[in-house]
Image (cartoon, rainbow, N blue to C red; front, side, top):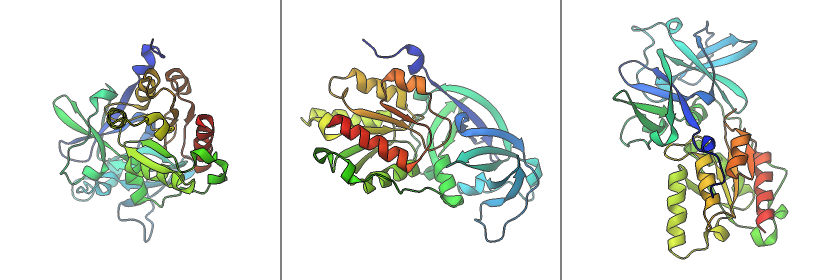
Length: 305
């Protein structure tokens, strides 16, 4: 019998669509958006990254504004075609710090099933910054990897130091492999660095579907997957199969039901604790914090031991 109600598996993606000039449409998960505003007056910063337009005084804080087009390798609309003040700013949050993306126009918010988001095609100049694509009204909308863009345009402030170490892990579980599931290459990298500090090995996949394909392949080869991969650390919002559906699928399988599952996101506000509990996640972490993540992983290994 299924562990969860249909409403948990029907968790859908709200996508904010916007333009950077031309007909190509782009999207960002609404859960990663704090608000959308008309571009405020900017103060330029000397020696800042080439994509940084300046800093605005916003809600009592200094808000760095990044030209989204330049950040993903496209031609900027700013100059002869548009003034900075004519564009809009999408305010998001990165590691507890607010950052704004300048875009030429805001389109609308649409609602999709995660299964409608496909892996990105290769070959385009902005491919490295695309986490998925979706066909909407006959147009291919590119869903952008916010974490990767921000990691390359603002100074990363991630601290991977933790108060736990491999000595806190039961001896039988030291050196274990941990499956990391995330559509963002930067998020995978941060989780892998925490695992490395614990003496653990990261096995990385880009979404729930790819993770299940890997697990099934190993199982068919006769590998006791649950023993080889005692802990899974998964993002929530991913193309093709999201973290809630992946967790529910693991719990319904005799092969994988004993795996310790940590649902995790590197940006703010994405995890619904009730959904996480319904689908059978052992832990839900709503922001990247190396110490919290390391502790959750160690507790998972202790539980499996």
